[in-house]
Amino acid sequence: MMHRLPLVLFVSLLCAQVQARDDATPSKPIKQASAKEDASVKEDSKPPGKESKDKESKEKPSKESKAAALARAKEEQAADDIAAKIADKLAIIRKEKEEAKARSNPNPRPLLRNSFIAPVRKPAAMGNANGVSTIAAHSAEHWSYEGEGGPLSWGKLNPANAKCDTGERQSPIDIRDGIRVELDPIGFDYKAASFSVVDNGHTIQVNLGAGNYITVGGRSYELVQFHFHKPSEERVNGKSFEMVAHLVHKDSNGKLAVVAVLIERGKPQPLVQMIWNNLPLEKDDPVKALSTIDMNQILPTKRDYYTYMGSLTTPPCSEGVLWLVMKEPIEISPEQLAIFNRLYPMNARPIQKLSGRLIKESN
Ligand SMILES: [Zn+2]
View 1 (tube, rainbow, N blue to C red):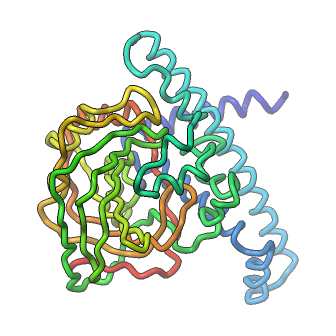
View 2: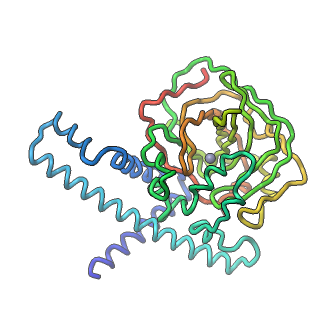
View 3: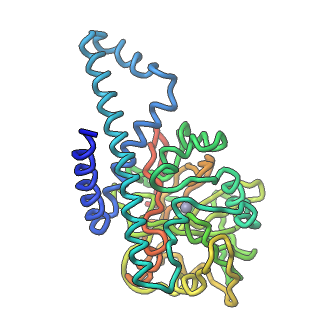
């Protein structure tokens, strides 16, 4: 009990800081989380003690350095514990805020964050023709972006999610030091298509009718769905963007290629507006739009891109995903940003280790 008061003070101080940063720079909190995640990934993926033993045998195996390492490990553990407590506290504060907001604003989507924290889902409702979200549904029980089911626990929530912890080719990454080459342009063959919008408890997803393709590396992939993250999951030279759209394509063998379109604040975006117009009132209950969308409208004018091999950024974190990140961001208006922010203020996985992977970029 003696320790409680200082801890609570410390936690609330940190919360205030985290929230202040939330508004100013969306990138900060992620960076902290990613550093932590890196540490835990390392711990989990190696047999216990192996790495530190290797290191020590190369350096001096003195008692002192062992003691120092032990102390450091303890410190890190303590920091992790505090971070977990902060995350919990933050979740509670946000929930209270949301409840207060809902009380003062009686009409729209009340307490959405509540069900976001503890999603009640019908796996069947998430399934759609594409298989991507169906895969996710099997291992999607209670994962979230903060608190107990947060990114650090994804690998432990279900054996099917093991790659989230142990994978060496995970996404997202901080894109830097790419090799500049003459990359073949991505062949976009998009045309107006029917669509439905679903709030799957983790993001707003748009499922598309057939007939939209990209060609890359001599392979053809069909666009099956796209969805949004806030802030952008990927970074470029350390910079994160307001949001990102992930356009998920699949080839005839089930291989995935995701086109990432970075989004910054600016002019209104007509395609995004169409999606927002069709936002569902209920989770896991797709709204079929009466109109069609033309996905050419969401692509930037310049088609230069970065490419690397990675993974799904949500459980089960399956690898072997070809990532194509467009260099030029598109713009959406502050109002459009605010609408998504109300539903999902933070749904980005922390940055993952590059582990020696090659990144190529258009010259
Ligand atoms: Zn995504």
